[in-house]
Image (cartoon, rainbow, N blue to C red; front, side):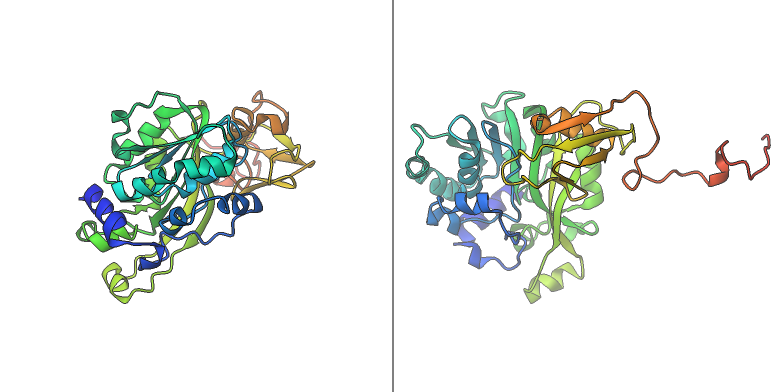
Length: 352
């Protein structure tokens, strides 16, 4: 039902973003100047059929090869095509013929608008649950993006596992989607309106974290989030109080990430060289790294900077030689009481 309903809802039911009944498939974040500039170079028909819920333009992607899962009418793909430059590429995958027709119909218009000798964008028709059916090589992409689409598919594990396989080591899945505060009841999952509005297929956030980790993305990082507004009375009644959030996550394909943030006494200093984030580099919602300042960092965050395309933008201090326990205010608290440690001399020794 999921694929057929998505094709029908986004190909036939919706004529444009103004037909949506909620703001789930709307981007509310204020785009940075670089994105606004790129958006001005996107064809009006492409923008009119846009249904994303976030900004999927990760930093420092010049020259990168990007895969856009559920590329729709192509707005994100054409923005990213400008950010990766003529030496990079963007491959969009979508299963809705009407959306693909819009995206493909303006390919040459965008090439000329960007001033490229040849187009660096292509659009493939396919189901993102079955990426193995497409001619995509393992480790082919530096970055994979998706904008409010994974919630629409039934086999979400297949999407995450395929994304992990298609990414290069050190690559990342950077995507926006909709999450529920608790599991959506089974009787709502086949509702065509709730599904098309990106609600009934939304993952409970706890299930998402477990699924991402078991698919190889061991330390999901939340970048931004916002609560969704659901003004349609009929939709509200069906959901019976379930709350939803739109959230953007970044998932890195990195060996050696630990289950939580561990402290090795490491630090980084940002050089201020990432375009658009010269003053502060935002790794995620918890790590805003100001240029020029020594910034203590956990082992996982170190790897996300040192073993990825971001390495050239940082100076690194320390190593993994000495472990100091859980990183303060970042990892899970120590489960033992204070008297459980030998350094606590206030409690008498005892045997068991």
